[in-house]
Image (cartoon, rainbow, N blue to C red; front, side, top):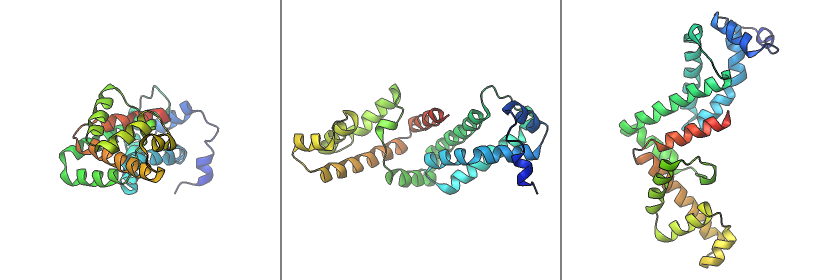
Length: 206
């Protein structure tokens, strides 16, 4: 059993020193690195996967990969960034598998349809913007108009309410329904754009 004091004794070590010891198979250093980074990795995995159990499994996979390949580690960025890259690849593979797995796809649709997708916080590249436009086109006319005004043009609920003659609660209902429909469209379209968006979000957190 690894003692907590032994783990904390590395708190003043440089990252280069820690990686060198890890390559030599130092289990205490490995425990220290896990203690240092696991919660951040887990939080991002949970946010992207929307499933605590799967996020926990992926977290263990990330650190197992680190331990199994410790002697071969070639880290050219920070160790923090290196962990995120491994997590990012696991998420990408998971979504690729979902495209081919009906049950897994259904699980993702259920998770996606119950979540609020904040368009302003998404990284939308040229291809992703095209997919977003296709998703918006599937919305009913009034809902599409409200979504564009609020989420893409940045108008307030009050402004849209005055423009269309509807209440803020009605606007909010349309926005919630629209964002659920759009996220479901991303998942069920068979496209991998949502993965690229997720990867970009991870990168921005580093």
